[in-house]
Length: 324
Image (cartoon, rainbow, N blue to C red; front, side, top):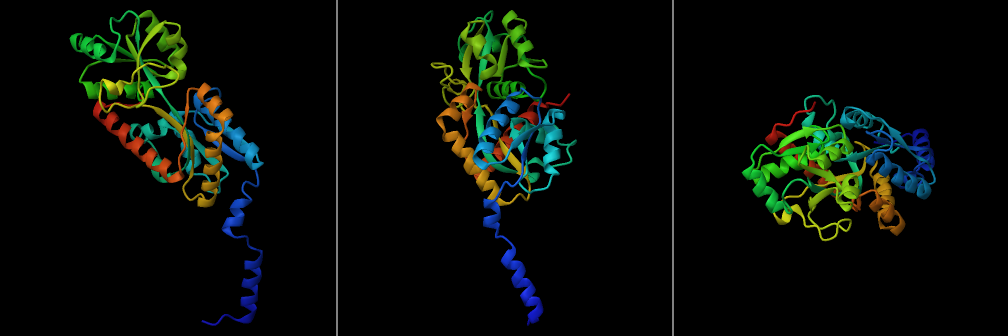
């Protein structure tokens, strides 16, 4: 088909002034970027999001502003981002809750986490620790399992609520060991640990940053970390997996974006996040928050998110866990 000369000149002129996708990505960001967090200011996710946001602001020359939208176990924030324009100016601070909620709230969500949120970059892994009341006569995971089997139904397990990490880590432990524990739900770790110290509950699977001070002071007894490897924060403490082969449970955090966000923008943010995770000063700040650097490509992080969604979905269905 022959294009009329007038139309050809119009197209040629437009092409000359239209930036390529590569040059457009190089000018990103041209205005402030929002990092939407599904939890309140001061929460672990909020603090970590502000940390990575400050780094991105300094590196990319525009403000990366944390936008707290708490509620519905982070579903409000996730829905907001899933429905936002995929232009790179609205990001989601994703974490373990997103993978859990995909099954826990399956019938209530009007978005699909793995379909509508694309992976951008991992930020941190968040280890947890299996800890018991000092009143419990056990000093190892193996001793705990033996004690629980001999005292079926008498072990109270503290959690931060149905479907929270503390609940799921304990549910996975029960599935893999065949023991029975009674979940006792609290609104947060502080009240749960208070009752653990007092002996009103006997065990808890809590994130290290919430419990490490009580462990170091001897107010509660740590039996093992829930990760695959031993943690520097609690040197010498074994892993649960050494007694329960295949057991692994840890939280995680990262960045996601609405489906359709340009690949060039995703790759640029990923590169900057990974640069932060390689920086000694940034890594030290992350460690102080109880996290470990989670370096990944966008594709690797996407595979990880899918695996976590499947893993915790199986636990939720097997344990018949329902949201409150």
